Each structure stands twice: as C-alpha cells, then as structure tokens.
Image (cartoon, rainbow, N blue to C red):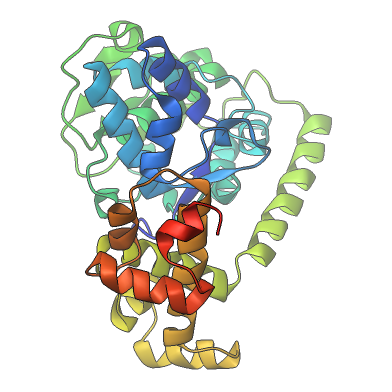
Amino acid sequence: MAVGRENGRVAAAPLGALEARARLYCLDWPRIAERFGFDPEVARQHEATISAMQLAAVLEHVAELTGNDAHIIDEMSQLGVGSFSILDYVSACAPTIRAGLQNWVRFHAVFARGIDIEFRVGAGTGVLEYASLAPLGTHVQLSYGIAASVSARLFAWSERLRDAIRVEVDAPAPQHACAFLARHGHLFSFGHDRIRIVIPEAVLDDVPVAAEENLYRIVETAALAKLADLQREESPLARITESINQHLKAGTLSVGSVAGDLNMSERTLQRLLQDEGTTFRKLTEDTRRSLAERYLKETRLPIKEITYLLGFSEVSVFSRAAKSWFGLSPKRIRQGG
C-alpha cells in the first residue's frame, strides 16, 4: 500500500485555510501558487483538485516562511463539515462508527485520489491506516494536517471517541504549540512509519451523533454516483499524461518511470498508448507543448525555470523546440507574438 506519487490528487478546498494564513503573514499568495504550479483561486473553484505532491510541498514552504510548524494542526482540525466533500456526510451519517470508518475508506477517492487507506479490525481494535506518504517527499505538514482533520472528525462523531482513540503520526512532534494538541495531545504519538488512528473495538458499533437513516440513504446514493463519475474521468491516457508532466519537472522522465507509476510493465504501457492511437514520444511532445504554452502565457516564471520544468537541458534547446511548435521564440510568445 503506497501513495501514487504522480497520480495522487486531493480536493483543493482546504487550501483556503493555508491561503488565509499566508495573507495574515503578508505573504504573496499568488506568487506562492505560481511557484508551485497551481491557480491561486483553486480553493474557491468547485470540485477543483491539486496534486498531493504540490500540496505537500506548498504546506512545507508556508510553514517555513511563517516560522511555525503547528499552525496546520489547528487549521485542519477546524475545517467545517463538508470541507471534505460528500465524504464527510456519508461517513458521519452512517449507522455505526464502524460503518462510518468503512465509508471513509470506501469513498475516500471522492476527496483524495491515489492515496490509499484501509480500515481493519483485529486484536480488540479497529485501525484506520494511511499509506506511506514517503513518495511525496517531505510531508511533515501534510501528515499533521491529515492526523488533525481526521481525528477532529471522529471526535465530532461521538463523545466516547474523544478519549478512546490513539493517533499515530509519521512525522516528528511539532516544535511549536497549538490549541488542538493542548487539548488532545495525550492521544497523539509521533515518529511512526504511517498515520494510524486506533479505535477500541468496543466503540465501533456505537451510533454517531449525526446518524440518520433517511439522510444516510440520500448521501450514500450521491456518493456512489460521484465515485462512478470519477472512475469514468480517470482514463489511462490522462494518468499517463500527468505522470509525464511530473517526471518532466523532476528530470526523471522515461518509459520505465511512467510505467512504474502506473504499476505496469513498459510493454503494457506501450501497448496501451498504441491502443489510444499515440506513442510515448508523441505524448511527451504534446505534453511539453501544452505546458510550454501555459507557462509562457499564464505565468511569470522565468524562461530558464520553464526550461527545466519541461525537462530541457538548456534554454537554447527549449527555444528551438518553441520555434518548431509555435513559430516563435519563448520571449515572443510571452510578449503576445
């Protein structure tokens, strides 16, 4: 069980809290968004998503700029019901805590795709466990956010859970204080290999305070429909293109690296592309061209930085490619032709 580093995407709505913190500290939020490759308005866009890797990186960056590594814990613990899309409702309205946790796993892709979680029961406990976040790089802030947001939701489900659960976090303890840990820190331990929330089996069949049979039927039907829509949207070609995009930025692009992201052999990847009427070389070229146009027209990123984001070794090589694609140099494209 692991995070699909290139494919993992999460709902962008919780970025609103991060943006508010950045502006409170007089940080240039649009510039931060540009640096990490997302729209500064994304948190307000209906059903918008951001890659898990982008999210992990921007959380670390803002924590470093503000000089406080615990803000994220309070922010994520205070997210309102609905911030996690219909996942919040289909879990909180379930008939039992056990069913709610099962739904958290069952419908997790509605909020976060490519980040695996599981729920299991044994030896007197139920365990909600997240996949290793290591493929995302440094992810301390993301781990704090996940642990705080999920545990806060469980506290809202039942009074009994407030002192019954244990929260294991795959990151060192924060250096700064925060209100949420001041109240609940005795339930948390740090330095583990995964994020786990451990619940006594004795409370799993308790009824959540928000459980309501008629409402549950409605939200479960809506959640199933949303999940089906997402599965239709996630075509193999879209996943391959996203992987190519990320490997271009990292300078690690190869048939093997993309095939590895998708858990398939190189031969299977090549055959899949052939079935879609394209090749790895052509799809890479198309991806570069599309990204180049967006970076040059929609961002203020320096041309040298764009060069490396597209996987080119030198500006001159990028310039020749741009002229072959658009008939203009990168500078002329940015100036509007």
